Image 1 (cartoon, rainbow, N blue to C red):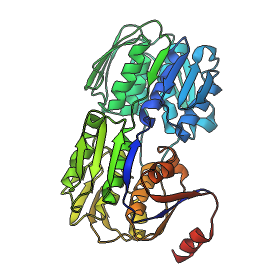
Image 2: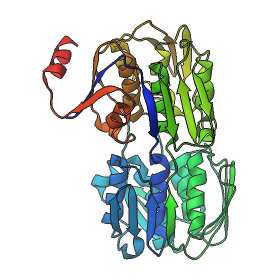
Image 3: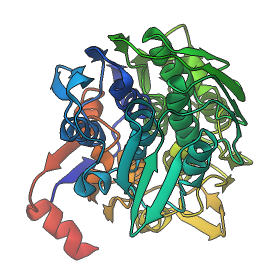
Length: 430
């Protein structure tokens, strides 16, 4: 079991390039299965979820090479559309394979996907949409099988602007016969990036990034090359980490327009942030202050993936902040761990009341999911004393070698691969 050990209280400073986006790369890698030529994807982050997706592609017969953040994929050798259970159970995003495999090969069989336990995330939107495109859905004994000779274009209206469903249905519609219209579509930047990738392969898509997307089906998608965009959630986490330590951090390879809601809330909390075309800088502020209300929402609202890291910052802000989670019903699992570090937080259903304290203290804590783990890293950087974070594998799903990134900015953070006296002492004390 690996752990992170953080000696808090160090001011972060320096420049760091933000790595490619996990949430953009995963559907792009799934979409590769629809092409009939080799594809090169650049700036693919070296993350556990990415490697699971690459293993899934290998399991269905694709030829995959990955090195130096580049993925070379030849999908022409795919010879099965049955995804192994042990890979499906490791990552929820494996659901992205349904649409493209069904569209190209006429059949796909998966088990129910796994992933972080942050609340109910039904795949009903995916299945209902595929049915509206003419797929036959068989759901029994924990497996989902989809069949269709060729999908037929149609009009789909999503009951909720689900990012995953929008992406899955957009991919499926690319090889469907005729026109498909997706209403109440998600507007996240990753939707635009997937559409740009598919268009580079020959797809015909308009409206990606708006609430209505129109896809004109084509007979085939060819090969090509594509650069994965920067990760906006990593960008936000690093901005928060710099702000909570009173640091001066410059982030390159960013898209400020993707982080507008986060930037505005940090400025509301007294953080100085400047933005240029592809650079964000957070500077030392006079002190953090509470935010009247933060409410998560689909893009362009405040992202649910940054709710936990921001709460760690607000735990040290002067005054009381109100944080409401509207996307996932079980995304306050980081709160008990922050309380162990001296935070003052009360939760009422899906709203948290965060009263800022003068000091957080180091403790032995556990990452319960990916973004909760990021929140504990932020808190550990700001805390007085040593913080040991257990279950680091959650963090590794979304942040590439987070300890190396933060050390480059001056943090005192190390990864340990077995309990040492330092960790054991903190465990006993806790």
